[in-house]
Length: 221
Image (cartoon, rainbow, N blue to C red; front, side, top):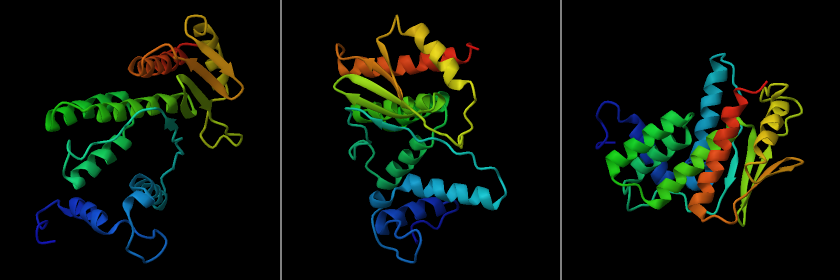
């Protein structure tokens, strides 16, 4: 507390407290535990939604795609040694909402901490794929030995406000691309075959395919 008595140090102090004691029991009075066990992002998301509801604001549900790739995606300790600063960067990365902000944060991290290590580059790839998946209502992306499978959201009650004709338009785009891209339609999604490509090129192809689908969706009717 003595070290962080300057104006605006409250957030840094709170993160330091999380570092030392963990988030503890969210529903009780316990103050012990580890942040890894609870999930800092989930805690912050719950807090933001609760505050919005108390303010009477409409809370729009967002899907959180599960991205499972053969990548080591994290911020190494020797790249950002200060754990409080590292947590802050993790928080900013996880809260990104657009490609523009992703590019801006990538440049900022590079300027502040130096050339990006492979693990951080991979982490940003994962976030980019997640952002593109959200636009297409994809809930899961998995890598099965170079075959990338994408699973669509199942939302019978339309909690996520999916446009009625969204998947019809997506299928039109999908079939217009399938002849030029090794895509295979599945009952609950689709598959991209990239087994003949090195991993970096395969990840790039995944991103370009999702980007193309998202862009084509804006023009098809």
